[in-house]
Length: 92
Image (tube, rainbow, N blue to C red):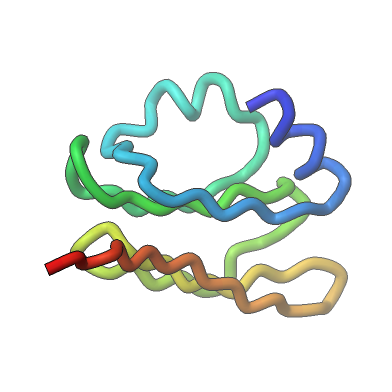
């Protein structure tokens, strides 16, 4: 998280997949920036978007499977639409 924090403070928006995180209490205590998380199971899926606290979240959509987040972030009068989608390989 320290490496990610440095990048986020420089303006990066980080999308993580396969986070497997349902409860974010620990993340709240160690992450000083903002994030959006969508996780439903501890053994599959889970997506997260990490970003600087300068952004306001004007809209967010999360699917029911923990595989999608769509958000509109605003800073300095500009909107950024960001999506993080995870679709696993299906080898069947």
